[in-house]
Length: 316
Image (cartoon, rainbow, N blue to C red):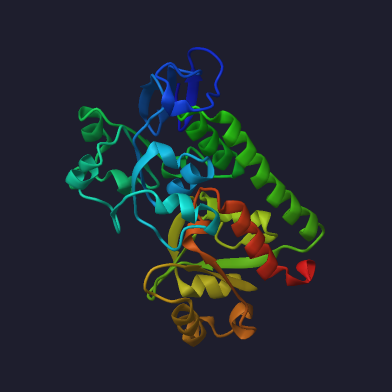
């Protein structure tokens, strides 16, 4: 088995009604290869910790809060549908917990959203966790083998469903997500693609979405064209002169952290290199929270939100 998120069921059908309750849950042993780390699960994890919002919400979407003993690192508010479940889980740290704080939760499984969740210099490396008897998994957007698309989103949800013995829940979640995207597709059918530039951050150069990440897929599904899809990575720096040359019709601002959306708009509107750009001239901005632009369950609603902002006539 090679690559990210591959699974091999080595015994029986999957789908225990209460997966954490039995050490002989159906579908186990289960072997998963994830970003170069191969793990064989003898049973579903019972004491999981999630690090980063999008993986926390994947777990909550699958109804796995009773299998969680800790969580950390939100980018913004938890989705309202998951708030009650989230409130019952111990928050270990505002950002990443120390190794000691992580161990204090006595986890048997740590699920991280980014490679930074497993920073070796901070003691949370996957090898260190394995030596402590703790299994781990990182969201597969952290180790793509090609452009990240909806296929990878579904693969991630399926893999977590299998690890926790709830594949039926994973399939229901995927079906619901597909339903949202199908609705968007029907609304924008026949619309001309809108030229889009993503502004994440940066003052000397612009940090933008390239062609390899889920952000590029979201723009396509929302009826847009990512003007920097030729960047062969998820994110990269470009000059503001390059932005001006490509003349976006809409600028999509990623909203997170201390730098407000209004502050980002003011900076872009005042940037002399962009004064002739159609999006600046017409003040056409769209906004997406960062939590919607990473590989997780918010991705379809993020596509719908973006489509509504760049094709408002199709949603009138």
